[in-house]
Structures are given as structure tokens and as C-alpha cells.
Length: 358
Image (cartoon, rainbow, N blue to C red):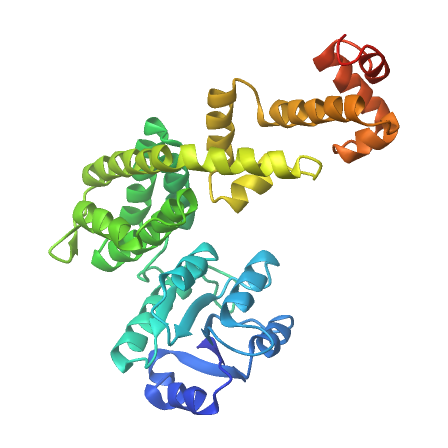
């Protein structure tokens, strides 16, 4: 039986979910009903579940906060379903970032919940071990996560050769498992979620419906998957181009935002990785467009901003050099002097004495 935890601060909602369907008949057991995200979090510290269904708005810890916390702390990789009374795309975007499986609006229908449980059941039992520690017998629907993740990475980096190889590896694995419509659908559904996530990472404001339409037009036909490896290879190339278009649209705006942030917070411990996370841009891509625009790395650009600011302070104030170094972000005065000499051609002391020249 797959283990389920329900999380909601409204008892009648919890009770309604409990009796909405025949959980046992679908292979599930409700092992925990938590009144808020905090209680759920404490439970997950010691107990494992396969599926979490949580309300988005609760005291102590919301559903989104619970999802974010357990993913960042790697506390649980359970399937996560968010319940909400709000049809707000921003909530859905946040949920997608932390691998939320579904975002369902209240009131929940029996058909919708049953469909989700069947999907989890198909995937959740895959690749599991039986009581003897050996692989489960064949015939179950299999999710080939490694092959799919490799394909997503290749699409993200627009590496054509690796895209084709990843598609071949995926189809070889599916055929070896006894390829059928359920296996194909399960893997395509996972790919779709990952690709949506990838697009949202490039541009938080991107229209999710636009992405879904693009994927559906290229992967689905009249509700059925176009199930050939050749077609998936063509789609992978198309989606890589689609992401490239998103990057072109956002790169200029992102660089302006980052430049403004550096100007305002140059003394802080700014890193390319942290900024890429903040602005939802792939760090490798951000590094590339930064170097292309400024003809130097992010690290060198930040250093030049700091040293130029220090030069102004040397001329306009009588502050000690060690204090100026700290004010522009350098705790090590010797290192600051070294970088100053590299960029200005003389020591800070000489620069001040000469009135701003080497």
C-alpha cells in the first residue's frame, strides 16, 4: 500500500478527502492527517510517505512553505499535491519550482483525485524492491528518470548530439521494459513537467499555457502521444530553440537588473550562482551573456565596480585604507591593495597622494 499524508487546517476538508474515494481500493493508506505544515514537517522527520496532499494556506507553515522546506532539506521526495481556493498562476509557478506534481483547485472532484492517484501508483511502484530485496517483476509502468533528466539537460544546453543520444537511450530502455502506451505516457508526462520548469527558470513571467500549448502541439496529437523516437528528437530540437528565444527576450532585462544590483550591493558577497537563482536564469547561460556584454567575467566586473568605488572614497574622504577596503567588500586589506594595483597601476596610498592618478 502507498502511504498518504493529508495536511489541512480545516477538519471538514480533511474528512471530505478521506471519504471522497475508496483509498484502499486504489492501493493507498492514509497514515497521517496533519493540521498544518509544521505538524507535517515534524512527522516527515521520522516517517516516510509516498504522497502528500496539502492545503496552500495554513497557520504555522503553509503548503508551499512545507514543500519548499522538505525539498531544500531533502527530507522527502514524496509526490506533492497542492490544494488551493485560488486560481493564481504565481502559486502554481512556485509549486512547480519545487517539483510539485499537481496544483488542484477546491473543491476537489472525485475524478480528478482518482486520476492523480492512479498516476502516482503507476510511478510510485516502479523500480521498487520486494521483501527479498530483489527487483519487482516486469510488467509495471516504468519511469526512466536518469534518461529523461539527461535529455532535459541536453535540451537546456542545446547540445544536439547529446539530445539524440538521450532520446535513443530513453527509447531503448522503454522497449526493453516492454514498451506500451502507459509507459510512453508516463515518461512523456514527466518530461513535460520538467520542460515547463525549465522554461519558468528562464523567465518567471512566462505564460505557462503558452508552454503547454507548444508542448501539446509538438508532442501530442488528438490526445495521443506521437510516439516515435524520430519525432521526439525533432521536438527536442524545437524546444531547445524555444528556450533560446526565451533567453533572448529576458537576457537584456536580466542583465540590467543584475547590473543595478551590483551597483547597489557591491559590498555584499554577491555570486553568479546566487544571482542566477534569484533571477531564474541558468548560471552557465548567465555567465555567457555577462561576458558577451561586458567583455569580462562576472567576478572581474564586480571587482572593477568595487575598486572604482574605492578610488572615489580615497579622493573624497580621509578614511583609512583598511576601512575603505571593508566598505567596498574586501575584508582582507592586502588582497584589496593587490586588486587595486592591478586595476589602477599603483597602490591606494599613492593614488590618494597623487589626487586620483597613478
